[in-house]
Length: 249
Image (cartoon, rainbow, N blue to C red; front, side, top):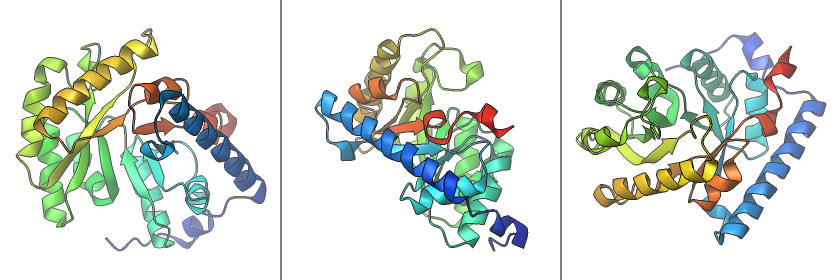
């Protein structure tokens, strides 16, 4: 891929000084909260990586965060993620893009071209589509996480526990993919501890088959400190880092 973008898009990569200062202050606060949660859980701060969820925010915010050293960026729609990734790449800004939303097979080729980690793999058909796409691109193995459905309602995305082992086998049968771990969202109405305890147990189950699948992506702005207590290695933070999406007007 050429990474060419229109000049106007490249110009939009510069955040205002005020916005950059706001992001820097928010980033420092979030990192401090992660460090405090790690200390409370008896863990080293380096064990937990922050994924800044930039969905609905402009590419200039993503570029500003990268300039502040926040290189793990999360998106949940390919239509928005692909041009942002292309814009940063064309500007020579390195970032690792995490795809965290439900993914349709017809978007697998696009996502495989820019994602460093696809966190929402939940069915064998998607495994095949991503593996085929990664193979055609000739890229290094594409990292994936298995999205867990903690309450069994797979309509919202995620694999039910009864189907988890088969999905593990599906991923490990494809050398174009690398199984890195699991991801989950706490179901509405669930206490965070109940959700994250279940995630930890399912992660251990996956690691019995794939010991290197150590990543646990769990916890968002409202519950990430509890996720860290239960072993999260990736926390997905949007609102408290970038602000309320209603502020975008």
